[in-house]
Image (tube, rainbow, N blue to C red):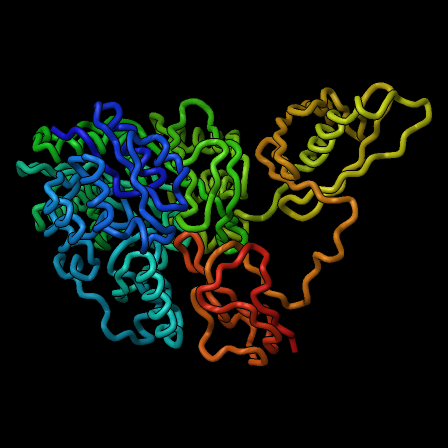
Length: 614
């Protein structure tokens, strides 16, 4: 029996595996980079081993160091989680060669399916080798890995070479494998997948379907089980194809077979030979623990002949530290608080007070709701996210709530182009007009006792300025003998943590949390602004500022100060949180300054370049 498990991963999935291991009485071992020294997964494990360095290539992608860590810590099994080395056949062999139990599929199965090009060949599908105008649009895709890295949609043949180069660079950085291929891109398909589980005795379960169509940058955002609106015949076909793929490679363990469904037909995409990020929705619907079943299979136990019956519907939303309205730019900083209402499953690699760094994926948590019907599960999750306490950097919380309530989603008519069509509307600022006043009154309530008594003479209005979604907001209020007042609003209560305001006979409660200049009022995030702006904070017109901290990975070939540039032209590329971000010219003109060089570490707001418009 397995007594000790090392998880060759970090963050949320490491914590998830540790939770099941703890319930089973299995000792846990974490590995961590220097950047993750104080991360939650390193703190909750029974033992932790340092991987020197910060970049994935130096740490979580170093299979040799991870195997040594497992041996040194006395682990007798390795769970790969997802991402990093989870679909690396050489790593699986190295684990086995060290005498350790590999909690995953055989290396031969990984080899057959982990490369998307080889998987397609196995299923009788040939990738595009010569792309013509008639083939457009096409999708450039990394052969290894996942999570949206190394993927580019190409709509203009002239862009193909540049996008191939960008995809190769990103795939090499993320997975250590720069192989890419090209396949047709279906504009309005749905991303549907089947969870499979196979033991060493010849039993293969097809555990229903999942719909993962809502994606940003080809990375899933909202997932659900079962996939809505599929006919029984199409569902049966998807199950049959998934089982066929598993049996074709003598698969063992948990895996996922992914399809694009369009016009009532299933198009095979790939097989992920690992546990998926979205596995909790399947667990909720089938009432199982997939990690526990992985452990049992690794110990040689047989599955029952038939899987358990599905019950109800489950929906999962990925909460990211990012700004969807600014090109999904990742955000960093202190996560002061993260809490959701009771009844919602929250899988996370963070606790209150943890720092969100620049080195890894910006996903903070996965929130999962389960209910008897789809409509109930969707409503429950949207309401929980709306009421959740998420204090810290900007997140995609509002986007998730609006997406879950969008008519196209609630009716089950979504496809992979959902955000292409609706992102602008979903990110349109809709600030709560009373939130800045509530923040100002809460702040004023803490200072009233320090300024002596009230006066008979009418006081001058106090002015506070805040930055929030939609721009800057100025509020005015007064100190009077009866307390704090504001025009058109009755102040029922005002203290440091709660403000109650009444307008038109309706009372609203505002919960206040302050962290320096940052203020969270219910679900609204504000920043207190100085009364008089700092004149030194101005930048030259045409300045390109770093939208996030990261590393300059490339500068456009031949680009120097004095170069002529055109509006929209890519000038340089930043890498942050495992994603590559393109910085483009804001206007046609001349590159007046270039402050960035490859390998340079930059902070948010750094001036990377200046374009002088003509």
